[in-house]
Image (cartoon, rainbow over all chains, first blue to last red; front, side, top):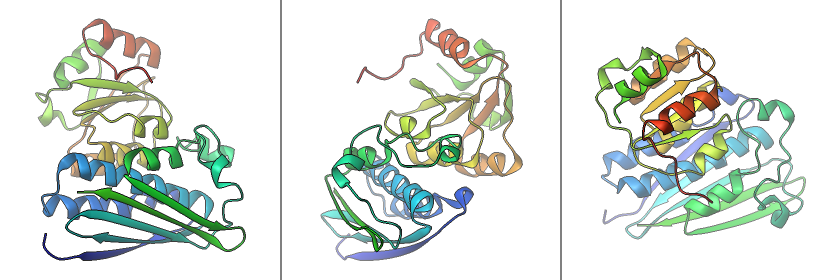
Length: 140
Length: 116
């Protein structure tokens, strides 16, 4: 891949059954580009966790993916309630998800730790009442 | 262990994807929490779960999990079956509970991941 490719996805809010469509679409595109399967899996899992978070907490948002020769960058932007204490939110097991989300198999407080685990770089910028931007990079 | 050996050990029934019964499975994961599943990255795995919604199939797609065993007789809906078929994931159901189903597979040589 000599050039930089940018892809954008809208994540609809409120519809839990559709969460993951963007990650699924990206995964398909990366397969067609013959990206290494381990890299694809790491990118797909990190983005999927982010997508689930956007649906649960922020009524959806937008994801931009920038694929360059050296790395894949995912920028997840939402206009949700924001994260009050990012350090606390990063702790494995800490969750503010409502109980009904736990019955759906999420809200275990593993989303952000998993996103960090599978990426080479992760930065969260958040302002309460304004929204959150999560930037993740996976090196190629 | 093949997908069909798993079906036989658990007395399970195929729901979709019987055509992939000869695929080899190397590890297994048993959980109803998908974020726990997403923390576990292994090749050619089987997932045992009592959770029955579309995000189970999505999680498997992201993880490259090739087979799902629904425990306690759970049955996926049409949308889950269609997605699994499209993504090449075998689905089966067994009447055994989670603990028993995991134990039966472990006893027959299927391994989980390393300890945290």
